[in-house]
Length: 134
Image (cartoon, rainbow, N blue to C red; front, side):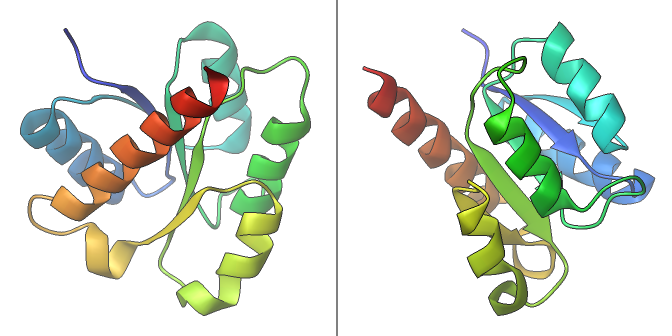
């Protein structure tokens, strides 16, 4: 059985490579990467994704507004979304949760080493989402 399919929307090539590589190698996740909101929307249409992890600032759209648009779209599948941010969590958390984000993850604190906490937060979000569907 393969791990969960995660779409990481991250415009930093270094960060995308580091996060996707670690989540795949150390945690068995199937991570796909999109650099823009537009590319992410296309990947969501073309792939079966279990969880969306979105950077706060994207080249073509604000990450929070992107998640809000995904949550409100009848054309895109429903899934848990996590916001991945380098900003102070307090500065983005309220708006993110209002937009439908289920968790806000700090790049500074959770994107290093083996990313055990980050991976667990993704898995918890997926499990909680699936239980709500039952």
